[in-house]
Picture 1 (cartoon, rainbow, N blue to C red):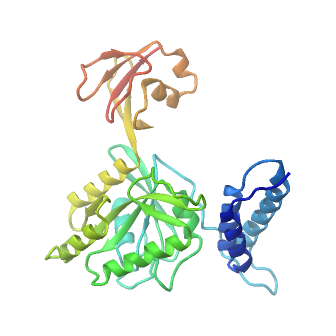
Picture 2 (cartoon, one colour; picture 1 turned 180 degrees about the vertical axis):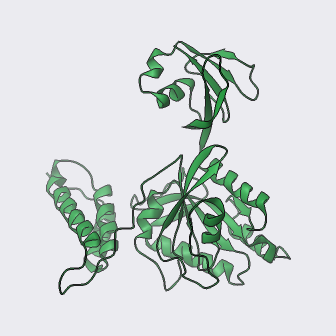
Picture 3 (spheres, rainbow, N blue to C red; picture 1 turned 90 degrees about the horizontal axis):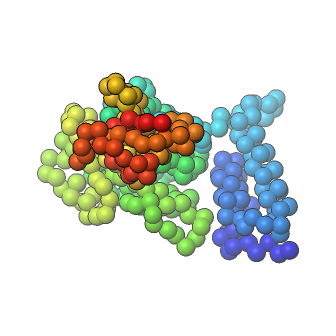
Length: 331
């Protein structure tokens, strides 16, 4: 049975054969496996690729052997925590680490020289009783790209591209970031529903953080950024301005496309500490199933409280909820 592999597979295969960095070879092998048609004609090819992927992973995480070189620990995967995973990327000294420091309990190295961040660092950010995971990353430049970044960026829910309004070469440096990612078949776009004819490309929904707002006194840099990214959500921020930081948190949360649903036991107050997080458009039944897989089947009706609703309004399981609604389940 013929394999009928797409042309993009052969492009990746050629890159794989030339590549020497094990992390990049791993990314290419995983991408080849992803776009490969799954049928009997590719069974042996799938098995071969899986073997290569396994060997590459062992090579990357393997400690130093006698007479050999030391391999660094595997950094291209961060276990997802909270309601969403948001990765911060940008040119050197753009301010990613200062934002992660302001938003989380993580303690990134913050310095006024480039490349102070050498490996990914995670932290949990609280936004209106919801925990969001932030990933701080090493900078991307014409002469610097850590290959493990590709998988981190591909696997995140959204990207926040941090731009330095104090940098006279801001647009040029941001363009370098975008070009380097395109080389890795990652396209930063304002919407997640965009598509590319080549399935090996990953579309990543992106918002723009225009950082160091107070150093752009004329506003010219922000205006340039808006012209460069006319369709993107752009939030101007400063570490000195708490309001702007809250606006960035809000933009991150909204970009995830999720909503907070609070639960209420019969005869008790609403629990505001641990909301159920659902995709926008989720129903009462979805909220019930998120609490327990059998809960939705036993549900008879629910009462809800929220903006634009009557307090204690009785609804059925298919009722579509809104962010901030409180639900009292009756089984």
